[in-house]
Amino acid sequence: MILIIIGAVLQACSFNLPELFAGRVITGLGTGLKSSTVPSYQSELCLPHLRGRLVSAQLLFVAVGVVFAYWFDYALHFVGGSFAWRFPLAFQIVFAAIVLVLLLDLPESPRWLYKAGRQRDATQALCRVFDQAEDSEFIRLEQESIAKALELESRESSNSWLSLFKNDAVKTRRRVLLAYAVMILDQATGINLVVFYIPSALTINVGMDPSTAQIVAGCVQIVFMLGSLLPTFALDRMGRRKTMLWGSFGLGFSMMMIAILLSFEGNPSTASAAVAFFFLNFIVVMVSPIIINRIGWKSYLIFMVIAFKFAFVPIIYFFYPETSNLSLEEIDHLFLDSSNSVGHVHDEKVTVSVEEGTYVRSASE
Image (cartoon, rainbow, N blue to C red; front, side, top):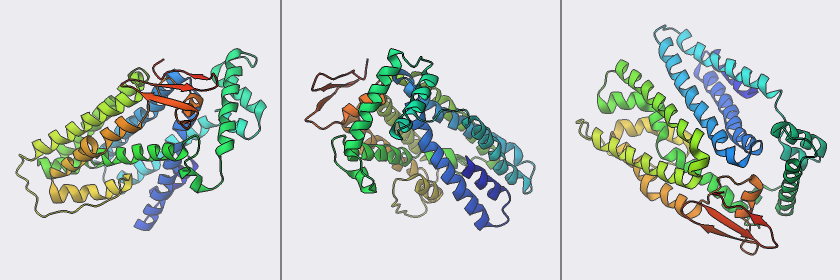
């Protein structure tokens, strides 16, 4: 949050592009740290059957923030002058400051406290978060499961960054690659084309006047927010794999329909375009305007192919296990090497049987 505040101040007070870019980079670093930390923190401080809705709630409020920011900027563009863009950039400070104040009363991660040798503080954090007495059975079981998980991690841990790609007993390399893949493919499906450049797409590809395009684009952002409500309230019941699979099919179908409908607008491509890029967020944001201008409706077809056919659906189907309703420690068992556990992937659940009498619940339980 401190980085976001510093970046917002630099952006709002900038008088040239280098200053604006520097502020944006600092804000982006703060946002990246926040976006990568919050889901992990939420996952540690909630019960397994609530983890899906609580973690996805972050994305819901991101969508709420996008809607608020869009219409806030839309209203201010009628004001004109530098105030129309300086004030929205400075307004970031308000929300960052609120979060910063609220963070002061939040407990530290119990798992981090245990790992740091602060057992007393960790136990107090668990009792506070789950509203349980220190001598309760629930707290005792949580302590035991965390201790076993940390012991397993310590046997396989290393201080080298290369350990992220180590094929150890807990399958660190596989887990890291699965995490990278879902984030990369998520950005490569074209969502940023819709979120960031829908006004340009409606103006260039559909032929709307700029004013109407901005209003329609704002309505699209509202639909984006409403669509985020479903996983927030139902993800734990629907399951992770099924939701990702159907979401990918739906996104691919939507991109296909956009491409088909826009192809009738009489906007043939004016030049051939060769687009080669890594499937990363900032690259998609940078190339999306070029794609829209050069190849028009076919740009949505590119993202349809990525989302629908060549990458996302088969990768999810064959490589991603179901983790609904499992604790973080139980999820560790899904990735233990074959000498210790066997995972059976079904349409709706993953059941893990572990030797030496340890039983890990089905993801559907």
